[in-house]
Image 1: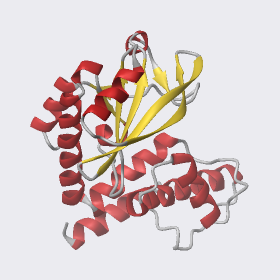
Image 2: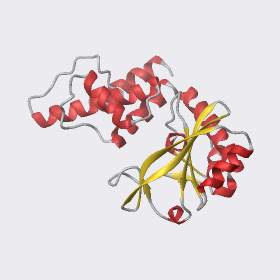
Image 3: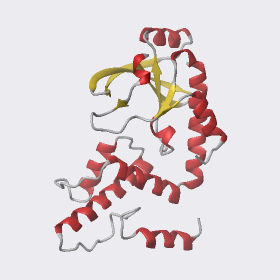
Image 4: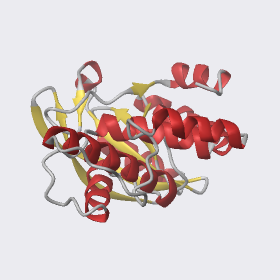
Length: 231
């Protein structure tokens, strides 16, 4: 990107916090609400930069680290995940444009290969790879839907694919439950296979009760994404 374009970008967003540099002095208005809004924007920008450059994937951890870095650990106006995600997309577009496009395309291709292998378990792609915000060290997240979770483990073992297993708390509708997640290496990239029941395929899944539904895409949708690599 040309220098003039970058300068124009900063000029356009200097007032709203997009890609704000937390190291620069910021003149705070007297109104406390305005101060909170500006700090919120700075925290979102700093958290996004950490996620893009340092490989952080946990929004809550990134915003806490950003708030601590900015001396605002007790702030009552931490940004929402959606605000950080918007900053992350802007940062990646500005500073990692071509690299980001190549990374997402490569990760989606790897995900699709795994989905085709696991087709009998009704796989879906989710997370940062689907959204297009995956960083340099991001995992691939797949959701599998089956009433026989052990069959997934046997399937992997029969192909000499080693894995670790842990539980993750998710919400199906308004019910919280522990979801088994198999973590493995897929062609040099960490991959997580979250195992749900067939009934849950038709429902709404969330990581928190008040959170947004987890977006997911099946084999056909991921194939279409790869045919339009700038999506």
